[in-house]
Length: 175
Image 1 (tube, rainbow, N blue to C red):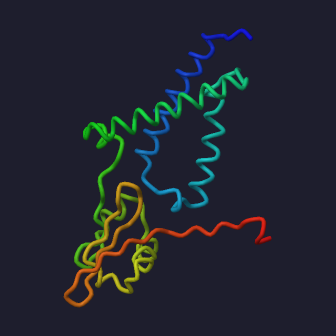
Image 2: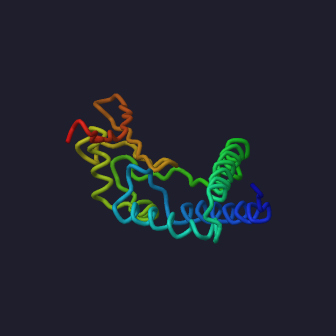
Image 3: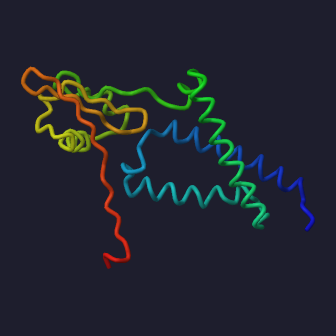
């Protein structure tokens, strides 16, 4: 089997450009964890993946072309992850900083707007942490991964809760 190395290098270059574009786009347009995606966010991810596929592989729809694009994307992800771990300026460029949403029982509206979070979404996150009222929250922070951490005061004791959303997956046995 004869390989067209020029075509594979072209796919590698295109995949790299698309990867950089996607990382920059997600950085610019906000942070949300996968479990926090709305239906419009999920639709965007699905449609973007379909739209950029052709930009990565061009007319080469062969198995080796697709595998080349996949290997390049995995390799770039590993390199970027290492660089973010090793160099703080790169980490700061790619990842945003944590954002304080509630401080001493008061919602910081400007910060809420900056992260495009509604009052209802914030209240839901607070309730998920087992806190019934905003006034009981000492500190709520949107972390760099999109999760919201809540520290509340229970009497004179500070209470930090860690809450991970539980996903309920249906299996064939449930049907």
